[in-house]
Image (cartoon, rainbow, N blue to C red; front, side, top):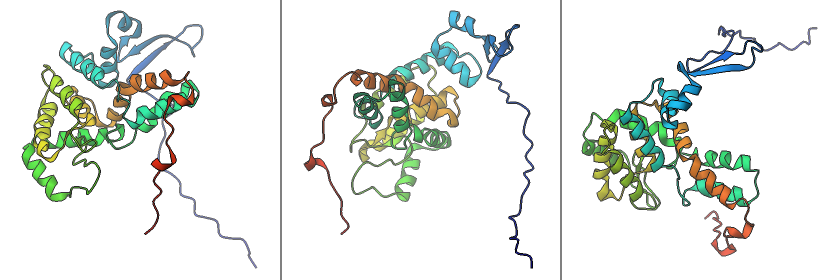
Length: 275
């Protein structure tokens, strides 16, 4: 009697893997003495040391992602965008995460990763950037008021809380994000501003009577669209832009006692029970 259990069927994969990884972004010229040590580095063909001498950080960031040096208008737009959103502000959950990590004596090397993990969420955070870029790219050929009418037919205003009627657009604390609106108004005056920012501004104006408008993610998405960045890279670029502000808030509290942050009293906790 055969008591041997039948073995699970083995499926062979037909994928053929490359022998080594390859990148068009970065070339390392090895040292003649030690092939594991880079003697030179080139970013899309540009020597790194020469870039240090002749180009700005914004130029090289653009080069990394786009494969070419930006023109003066593109560089000015990207720099303005990075300044405008350099700090999500103390009200943002990601900044609060950095502050809590700092005051909680977290290893300083982990403060920024903790904050960026929080910033990767969907609500007015990096996790919605790709969707916001794809929404803008899809809708720029349609009239903003027609798009709003369609969205209103498809959605119902929530009974409480904020309403994100579209990726990158909605309300914040039940009102309009005034600072993001001001930043967008500044960006749209720049020569590199294109259809993304122009359409987003028109759409946000349509939302005013509904108590909504631009969100920070929408402005960033529109600007990145006009600068030619790809949606898949948008979340990470937004994290790069916001990282200095997140880190500095965490570092500010790193050497302070726990009492430097509020302690929530018992009466401020709400425990929901099943009805």
